[in-house]
Structures are given as structure tokens and as C-alpha cells.
Length: 389
Picture 1: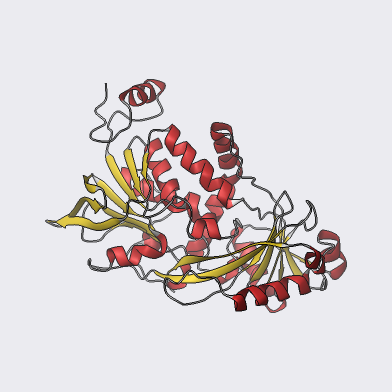
Picture 2: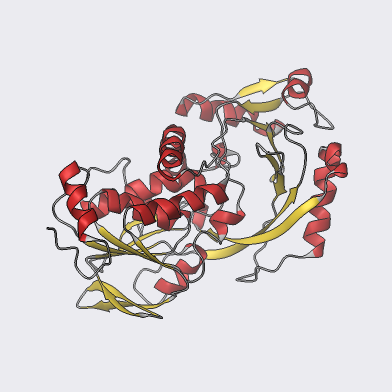
């Protein structure tokens, strides 16, 4: 029988996992701070690599920025980002369909990966988009207004010269988060909700665990995946990451299925139609610290723009209005990797608006570095001290 340490993973599970060949004999201990998409995906990768894992979440799992976003499996205007972001996004995009199929089969919860495609109105960026597409082997087509109207008949003003990215998909991120939580439960990962981490245990040049509201926990690796809260947790340590919150507000309309079928983006405002007809419209970008309160001004603005661009939404009730706190970072390049001065301390945070699309690749890269595998991409651009922007 394998020693699973002080973690509550059952010995029966560990034994059967080894017999099936799915996990290694050496069960290293990892603590993951943060129960959003990044934290749970990182925990999943570490568990599948053979680590005994615990996840600590200050509130309920999957209820912060990864729940509040839209679930587009692409950065908005991807050619505006550094190649380091594109490399992570490309890896995730290639793996999302199979990942969603597998986790749906395992949990019975379908994240509803849907290749609905993305129309972008950005006339002045056509040359830049074409160059980016050639460099990264992506499909970006320039379409006329007739093709625009054919792709999305409900758009009020289809225009010539829009950009069409047919390969871009979406997931229903709340369903993805529920599936991730259930999958961790199935694999014996203890997820401690409502258990805020108070500080890291650091001495002698290393991080050996953490102190949370429920007690002291030690481990071989501590991974900070706390989103917008990561900067505060790491702020007193050497080389703190420049991560801070940026609020975004979103509306959801209740529409009949098939009312709008394509994602459409213009001037940082986008529409995202779900399979059941629910239609998201967002989002704002507000530097207001950790204030997550929704505002009437943002609701009015989003409603006005949404119904101007898609008049059909005027007849659809607004079912929800919410806000989330994105974990901003310089140039939107996340921090992924080992602390330069403290052994045992890792970070996977600072994804800004791209936590879902970068999540699969970020979690895999973080796990590669923790367990000592060959990394899926060059990790240097995501290091704590790497130049960004």
C-alpha cells in the first residue's frame, strides 16, 4: 500500500491507481491555493501525475473570475497579445474538444464545448490579423456584409471587412467548473472550501506549506493559483508578481435557443450565445480594486449596446447581471513557474481576461515544472522575473 501521507486520499484509491498504471509510485504532496479554473485544472494535472493534492479556496469553488467570464476559447483580438500568450492559447485550443469530451464522460457534466466561431469588427486591424494568422497557422477570413449577415442574421448592422475566425469555440464555464470539482472529488483530491489561506510557511530559503483558517499544512510544493488575490498573498515575499484585480460586468439575456448563433466582438464588447438560448453580453473593464459590486450605469450601458447591435434582444428579459474580478498582469502574460529564490513555491496566476482559454496549457505547464517533465512550451516568458510587455 502507498503512503498517502496526511492527506485524506483513500489508500484503496491510491492502490488501485498504481495497479492501473495511471499514477507513479512516488506520491509527492502538493498544496494548491485557489479553487477556480486555474487552481482546479492545476490540481487535476498534479493528481494525474501522481501527486497527493489538496486545494484551498477562500470561498466556494469556481465562483470568482472563471465563473464570471464568457468562456470564449480565444483571447479577444489575439494578434494584440505577445506570442507567449498565443502559444498557450494554441495548445489549449487544440486540446479543449477532447478534454471536454473526457470530463463529460467521467462526470456526466457536459461543459458544452461549441465551435460557434467568432466574428470580429476591427477594420483597421485586418493587416495585423492576417500577419498573425499566417505566423501561427490560424484561419482568419475577411468577409463582406452579405457573408456577415449569413453567419449571424440577427446582427443589426453587418459590415464589409469584418474578420471571421471559424475555428474559435466556447465552453459554458460554470458547467466546466462543476465538472472539474466533481472530477477532483472522484480522484480523491480534498478541496477545502471556505478555508482562506492566511500565509505561506517560508523559512531557510524555501516554502514548506501554508497556514489556513483550519490549520497548518506542509507539502513538497505549494502552488499559488489565487487569481486576483495572488498578488496580496505573495506581496511580502521577494519578487512579488504584479497581479491586481480589474472588474468586469456582464449581462445575460434569456432568449429562445438559436436566436443568436455566432459570437461577435466589437470594441471590447461581445455577445456569446449558449446552446439553450441564454445569451451573454459583456464586458466592462474597471480598475476599482476588490469592489465586485454591480452598477446601474454598467447595466444600462451594456443593455443599450447589446440591443442596438442585436435588436432581437429587446424582447428577451435580462436574467442576470454580475461582476467578476480579473487577475490582471503586465501585457496579460501569466506568471507560471517556480519562485526564483524560494524552493517549493510555484505560481500559476495573472491570466487577466484569458483564464479559461489559457487554463489547460497553463495547468499543464505548471505541472510539468513541478514534477520535472519536459515542458509543453518554453517556460521562460512566464517566469516570475521575465520581462512582460
